Length: 207
Image (cartoon, rainbow, N blue to C red; front, side, top):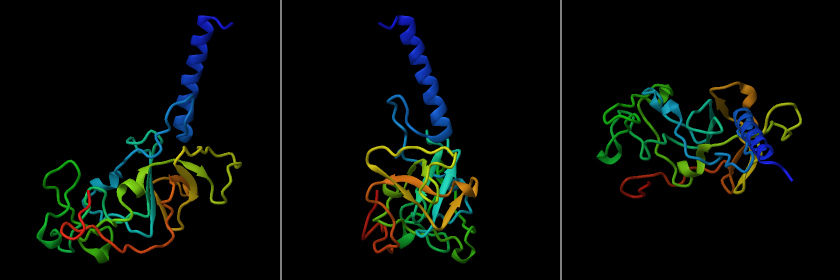
């Protein structure tokens, strides 16, 4: 029969092991939730020159302090998380509505320029790939070959998520070798489908 001191020591080792696993791979441990699927907003949206994301691309923000996994995944998402309806090339809002503003401000303008051909334009979000479906905390679950035996750290996807290779248009603020497979919400794999319905304040309101 294990003593009280032994139980406490085991609990301490469990906590320590969990901390190490979370820091190294963003994986769950000792019954704790992994944080995969938690909402996040990429810090690039604080940049007034950012036109937002393009549907055909995948972006991972590493060292994200919004995520317990330290990875904010933008998986084939269009526009800005903080601006569902986007804005026109001249910086005005669609249909005379409000333009985009920088998160945390009431009047911080998004001037664009990260994609020169777009001027100040920010594309509206796609109704079929809302932030809830395409932007959230994730972790790397396999390499580009779908393998996990190359010595790198990988996580195990929780229930409701599948391990899928993202790309090929992969962009990251971390090392290129971080491309590969990530935990994505089941049923949200991108197969090249176009944005058929865009968020619009009059015809198709989005949250």
